[in-house]
Structures are given as structure tokens and as C-alpha cells.
Length: 198
Image (cartoon, rainbow, N blue to C red; front, top):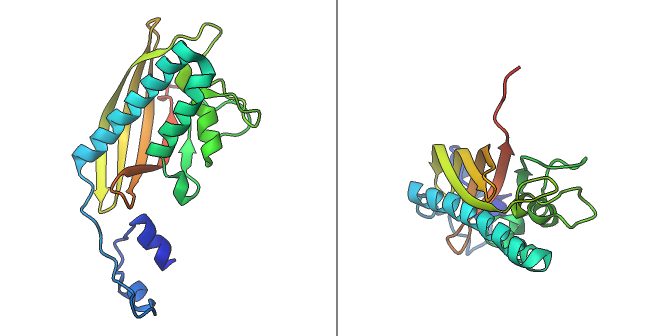
């Protein structure tokens, strides 16, 4: 447990003293938190997520799945924390019986489809329906940012627009951890459509 806490850079409000005393190795080092994640870093991560969505959509429109699927995999590898283990990813428009995408394969499927284990048409490649229009605009609108050392949360909306003028507003909550290289990794991603009323 102590090693996984250090690896993820997670530190709770509870004192680490009991955990530190459990380290028996002669070369054990105390948990030292890296610089606290800054608000500007969270905003940059949100902008990068939107940029990646538009890039995947454009790439699909120009080169199909042969080009967009490898790109989606690269985006997920760069932005998400699947190398740490399961990511708590609940997509907005997950199709079929599998709601959550805790694996890399599930995330790639949600973004571009083309996986028989999932029923996704591919959110990132454009608007749903027979005539898919690629996304051309994506803007985050952050309502709140919380930063706790090597972890941060952001909640708000993402506004997306397709080439045909279709627009969508999606509720988003992202949880980030800083990896060993200093990059922010998404480990929680909850997405849903805003409540429309009873």
C-alpha cells in the first residue's frame, strides 16, 4: 500500500507518519510531494483534451479508422493513467451493456469504435447518426478546480460543435494525478448530459 501511494503521488489529509514507520528498508525515503498541481496546468490539460478530440475527428474525416484509431490510442496513452491500473471512466454516450471504460481498449473503443467487445459508434469521430459530421470546435468551461498536491479535480462543461452546426454541452468531471515525468494523467473521467428536467 505504501509503495502504491508513493507511485501515484497521492497523499491524504491523514498524517503519513504511521505509513512511514512501516518502511523497513535501510534506504527507505520519506514521501515527498512534488510541487502542487497548478490551476494553469489543469486548464492546459482540459484544453489539450479538447484539442485531441478535434484532431481525432479531423483525422477520421480525412483518413478513416486506419488513421484515427492509432491516433486515439496515442491520445489515451498520453492523457489517461491506464498504466497505473483501471481508470474510472464513465463516458457520456456509452452504448450497449458496458457503461464504464476502465481499460485502455474500452477507452479507445469509446473514442473511435471498431471493437467487437463494445457497441460504440465512436464519440470522437463526429456526431452520432448516419451522416456523421466531424467535430470542429471544443471548449472547456471549468466551474471548479481542486488541487491537492499531486492530485487535482476539475468539474464543469465541455461545449462541442460539429461541421454541420450541431452543438452539444456535456457535464464533465476529471481527476488528475501527476506522473513520474511531471505530466498530468486522467484517472477519473465522468461525463454525462445535463439534466433536462422531469
